View 1 (cartoon, rainbow, N blue to C red):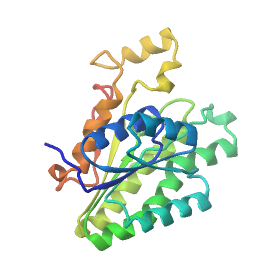
View 2 (view 1 turned 135 degrees about the vertical axis):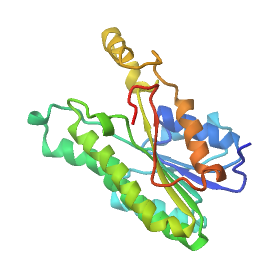
View 3 (view 1 turned 90 degrees about the vertical axis):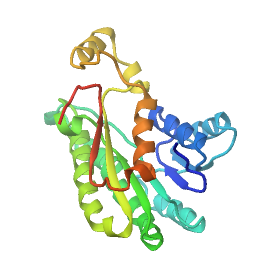
Length: 244
């Protein structure tokens, strides 16, 4: 049903839980993958798991130089058809204790780096008059979360950014959408204790934490021709924890 043969896809933050599943899912559907992350070891291990079928690029997206090197590499490949901005970072603290550094680092990775990378890549999408940009936001962008004012601000900003960009490039055959995951089984949720997990589950009507593959199914749909008339939207994947 979904076939991405001949489509080049860039996935940032590929070595994380959701990034790994995104990489596997799109590869299974025939895509040519470029995966990035900050750990070459993790990227190489993932590439081995995927039978060395990906192009890997170690990149710290907080660095302008690293980002420009990645963009130059992408340009040499003729650009990409689909960009999935999945890389993210948390530096949690109560707002009154939050340092400028904690605020700035989270905003840099979760929002500013998305702007830089997307700005560089979307130029070639415009020339081709086709492209997909999928930004991974979060449920907390809509609900807020104590101790995460920096992360919430960045993820909320990502949704606003996506809407504005979507309106600018829609006439060029490019769609820009967000996915807002709820609580998903990743390294982050594995660190929660039993009481924390039970509290979270009590707020989820489906009474379970989501799976990374359930984020992938939404990404695959948004990247496909089945979503041609959908842009500027946020798909909520959270088991009913937040209903817009």
